[in-house]
Amino acid sequence: MNYQEFIKMPLPELMVEADRIRRENIPSKKMELCSIINAKSGKCSEDCRYCAQSGFHNTEVDVYPLRSMEEILDAAKRSKDAGADKFSMVTSGNRLNEKELDTVCEAARAIIDETGLSVCGSLGALNEEDFRKLKDAGMTRYHHNIETSKENYPKIVTTHNFQERVDTINRAHEAGFAICSGGILGLGETWEDRISMANTIKELPVDSVPLNILVPIEGTKIYGIDQITPEEVIRTIALFRIILRDKTIRVIAGRESQIKDYQAMAFMAGANGMMVGGYLTVNGRSEEDDKKLVREVEHIWQ
Image (tube, rainbow, N blue to C red; front, side):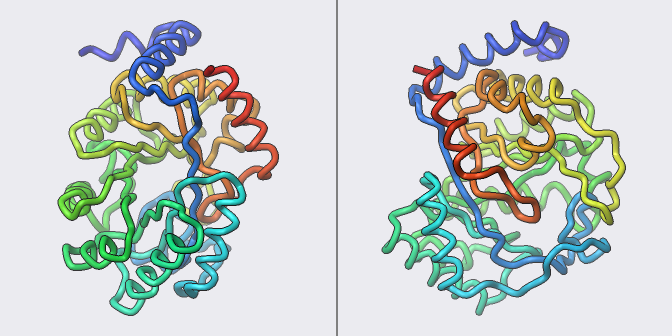
């Protein structure tokens, strides 16, 4: 299909089309909510140009080792109180060592036992044995973003390549995990890049697609880039819905600071999920504000 026509379509018409596709392909009228903990922060060996946690950048991000099982469990309990049904442990770095992986497995078991939340992980480029241990601990979903299109990727990261991202996704899927994979809007990509990114996700075993909007952090190599407009964000969400049809599309970091008062429009343009409770290095909105937004959107969806 030629998706170029949707780029030029008047935004209200595009939103109507995307919302129609969401209603036809996703019967649930409930917003999908997830939450994360930044379980290990900073000093990452990768050079992703946007990331405040990269060791190649001079930022004021907090740096700390893997949090304890008790700290992770406490965060999961707070996430459940905020309305999340899924909780993810996210760590900086290319992959965990054996001791760190054991702590994550211990935390996964405790979260499941004490909260009933579905447990996810975003732990880097793990191998088959790592995935087996996480699966045995009860983790059911793995998150590994492709970040941008394969064409744009070399402009954003040089310490690993796009195919490594794809290989990790496929390993996680082969190990029995549901896959969450999306990326970041506003990395200097073109509309062709956005279409390419959505088509790559469509070809992969992905059922949940998180879309972040770049929040430029001073000290990163991409700081100062021209920021994506709210209209572009809404139009991109609609385009992803049209291409991806029945996937969960989650609006993640940047919705507060970059699309501001237009947040509700994202959920009229095809998105059906969001993250609550803050992000890796950027705070989110208040719990009450997000609960109000969810109530308003779900009322419209009825």
